[in-house]
Amino acid sequence: MAQTYYFLVASDHFLQGHQTQEVLEERTRHYLAQGKAIDFWWVRSPAFLDAPQLADIRRRCPSPAAAVVSTDGQFVLWLKHRLQYVLMGQFEAPSAAIPDPLAAHTAAR
Image 1: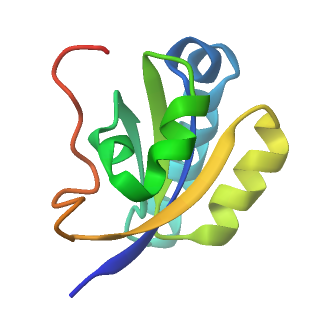
Image 2 (image 1 turned 30 degrees about the horizontal axis):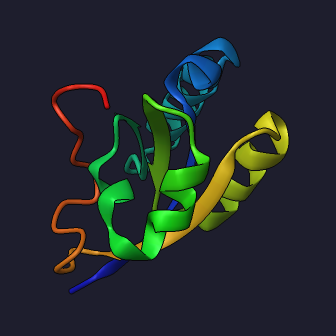
């Protein structure tokens, strides 16, 4: 059954320079303390950007790209407001166009 995934995407350099990792580590600690399952992931060079329905975002995002992917749309929206200069979207997976929502290209593009 397909799941909706929400994402933020920007250049890998931008996301690393804006303390994204620190925010994700803080949220991980919070989830673990609450006994909540992790519902967000850091994906470098995300393969989902190759899906035809995300072509516009792929064109607008510098390479190499990185993404924060989550099943929690509110978290992604909160993170977008915090980081500001990122692109936001969503997709359904698994699907023919996106068989693995967390897959990454092995070589930066």
